[in-house]
Length: 209
Length: 223
Image (cartoon, rainbow over all chains, first blue to last red; front, side, top):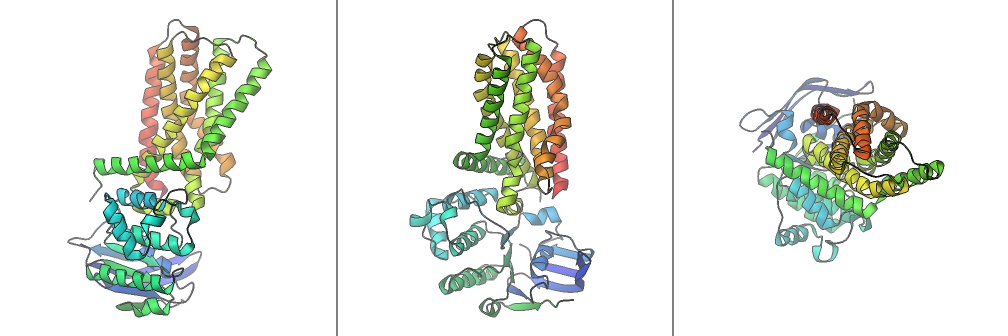
């Protein structure tokens, strides 16, 4: 299990604009880490850096379990809910869930699907066989979150995950990520939502350089 | 920790199954390939007005139709996912090699279905007999493998290009040319009968293997 993500003197620029300059910090597993900052501060970029999806221009990011892990080793231990990551409109909710779970080697039984659906407030009895293109934005978000829970990843990247959820959905979501963190997962939550930020165990505030 | 071959195979099979389900539901790429093939065949048939064409010409016509019909369908292999925003999700959850081979196998299956649909119509419209059916099937198999592997890699390469519509056939044609030349020759032999050099088949098989290996190596660098 991953125990620590270490940023060592990390710098990154996009299109001539410096986003991060000499960032050094440690992120411990088992806690919900909130990443906050104004629009353009680099919250989404920070998540991608932390999971080694993108590489810094300077410095190094180290991810550690019993040893330091390479980028290839880390990628299949990540799951994410981000605005740019979409699910398949032409598949049903159940097909989407089964597809992404299978990619991570998990075979879900019908009972497990109903149980997971119940946890995020998505009734698979009613919506399981419906194509995702008929879903509202909030229901899609719940399904994306359900996929994230089903694959049992070690690093959870969450970018504005409660943006389209109603209050009940937000509460369920925040309770689930707390549980995930308590089970030893590394949870990174980029948000501008006050309720989300309050649920975090630790906050990293990103300034605009 | 690298993914085992069985996990890669499972991921590739899941991607193939997903593409097949979506392909059946949307039918856009199947329809594009089938309509292009039918339109070209009808135009060629009307232009030749029932003339009996030489096997050499018939073989070339068959592969021209296959190439352009395949281009119409294959170009969307990655593009549809990129447009829908699902490609980044897929790349996060699956290994790059599984994405490549799942899509390559789906492209091959689509192309095989197209050829099964197209070939009988071609043979009837051009009143063309087949002397060596086994040779024809083998040639089409190796040809389809080559077009699928080159097409899938080219589709991945052109996904982020702004002029992908024009770029795809331009990039695909030179890569597939070494498949078409022996394929046309072998198809001519299959239509006309007679002695045929096995070296053409061996050449196609070797080139297919090179294409698949190169695609597998190069795809890792496209991330």
